[in-house]
Length: 455
Ligand code: PMP
Image 1 (cartoon, rainbow, N blue to C red):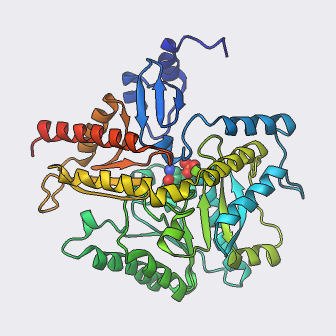
Image 2: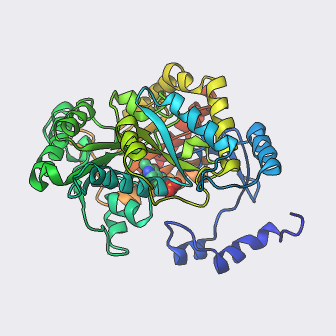
Image 3: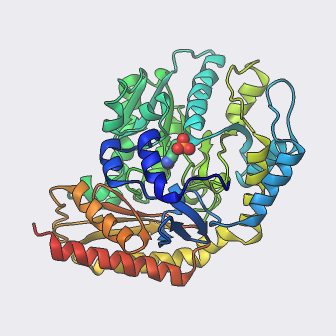
């Protein structure tokens, strides 16, 4: 540790050796990377000693907040006792098995089994193969097509990026792979036109029915969606959307996959996003809040419907990762979930801090450049608008979002922008005072946008 070079040199070393995810490296190297050194609660500190309120919980993941000594202790103990063993050849480790049981205890009546991965992307690849295998075992090998959504995000592996609906990702690496189709997203503000949100929710949900009918019910394996689209801009669907999606999947005999990577583990004020929306997935990828990001771990929650086939009829599932159910990551995740339970964080988001956040966030709608400010639990999306009355958006959405985000960061608030939407997803432990700070700093950035950009 003490051999570490002076932090002042790190940016130079970083530019020489480190390729960053989702980054324009030329631009980043010219600007210099920001070096985050430590964190506590909802605050992070950089190498210049600057403090920022992290309203994004890392990358939607640090649900219990930074600086949890007990998670570090649990990992340390496990690493000393058994740093690694696999779960492949008829073996398991205590933390892996106990974690599967613990996750299942929150999954409701029908999600009782877990397949472990290291990340959300691997969880995507895992359910993608499971869904196809499921139908094959049931004597329907032609049921292979998977329907996803434009602007959805499911990871960066080949299957993940293909299932995601991000055009810029598809353009790199000849994606999507075969057998993947995208339908519209429930983004009423931008695409709802003259329809009410409720009408629009039904309309886009019914695109699923149309797509299944176009492809043929006998060819469609699954439909996947995030409860609330996260990376796509915190797109909160109208109330009518999810019940209609669930109805269609059932009527057309298509597996429903709900991507819980962001919404799982309390973010919406329920243990899982599907519980908030009252739907029952057949498969549900998880990651992020599972360990609050303290160590990498993900998985797929598997319903009895799919598990019965996997367990009783399939034989070997030729799939798995060296670190599936890694004991140290599992021990950290177990302690993380214990904290969520003991501190009642899910209930806190539902009954206390979530409603407080909702009101504070909504108050920004009075601002001239805000078209809409919506939230569920502790996830918020704020739509910037050039003209509120007509829902007209700025001509260069990416520049506009970046302007607001940069102003926030300069003032000690970490926010994310997707195009012209500002996104918040703070730790579930955030206090009222800290929420006030988020809203105050964001408001200052909105003032800056109003005063500097004219359209
Ligand atoms: N699904 C969703 C909904 C996500 O938001 C993400 C990551 N942001 C992933 C999958 C991929 O997870 P990971 O980055 O851990 O591979």
